[in-house]
Image (cartoon, rainbow, N blue to C red; front, top):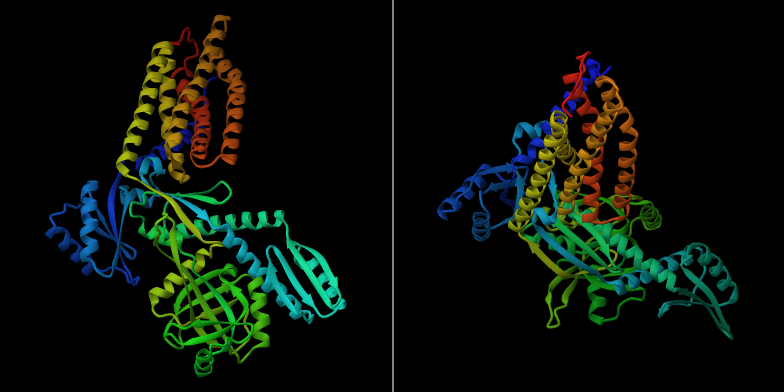
Length: 617
């Protein structure tokens, strides 16, 4: 009556064994490390390791080991003070190398090879940095206006509809025409392709103007789109830095919160977050001697803009942008096989590819310039506002030797490092608008360790009190419930580790709550068994009835709680998501341990005793 087939016992043992194995990485803790990487992206060698060892030894800084991890040297320390001292010393003496402080789990190699990894810890547990970024919505709106003006101009040229002027007057795009026929033709085109513009006509005498107004709704969509694009771009850039489980989310209408757990040196992260590097591909108007001659006169050709190449030579490019960094979907640094110089392989999306195809088809043999744009932070002014310097440089001006669309090369880069950095920024995407760091906080790992210790203690105390109560009140069955509860905690930790979930303080609260909920299921089962015994049922029948009749109640309670956890995860952010994740995992593991695993133990102890007259419950 109360027996499982052999395969069920084997399956339960396998699940418990795997859970124990993948929960193990969390007992090894983490060590402070300093990472060293060559600025020219050259892989570190044994000579680099020996130099690091020599510097640390001469500085009397105790360290555990120095290992090579890809292109990076990693030095492990036993305490944070040694880590900080080593960071300062290596920065001074390791010229040509970037150094950064971080934390790394101490998982054994054999366990890593089996896929074992420790739980990711959130900012409140692991320490790290917190940034609050403000998006420049005025710049976002102006960028959209420039893009619309350029796109409308290109559409009118393609349709061969002449215009006399096109300019923005506030939030209204004013386009002039020679006659009413051209105006009507343009209105039909613009109404179809540019739905964000509300069109109206201004016809008076020899004035034929078409006005396209950006409504408040359109402006709000532009700002929302800029915020979303910046969120996506920042996530990509942080992924390039290699931070595990970052938190990047919007706050209000124009701000973004970025939390990077484990990062202790903010320099690299700030450079990545604050950079706004992108490319623009434009047709060349004039270059070399002709451009120098025009530059001396001070008269820029109509429809063109003056730029400078890296060697300081002036060059004039057409105002119309063929493609931008926003339309890039791939970029990889390479060495050009023909010239042997650094280059970047570029891949455009469908819109950029269509424009590039049309341009190269009609301009084969002519020149196209590549403008590299970067916004560099230069410090704060007296009011505490961050100031920036805009850098615009033509990095390439090459002849179009054939027709191409979505794949091509960008050359003219000074070094392989420059090519690598450009490719990384392009892969991450361009920000729709500049961002300013308005708040920056660093949370030390020692504070995080205090939180971990307090959280672990709360779980231990809660678990111990529950175990003592169950043992005293339900005796043998209480001991069985305690075994199931302990295994439940192990399985929760294993699942959090395997799924790569981030554990935060609210997540620990979810674990404590799950401990109470898990034993509640056993209480329902045991009370049902006692009720059946009082009604005169046999021991074996009471055990069977207790598990079967309590199941629907347990399932209903856990499913409703799971629904609430799913809603919290779907609509919550940051810590709320962490609480929802641990609660959801805890519900599923507790259902398994309280119903399946505990009954397996009960069956092993009592299932083979046919004439059982009493049980310790």
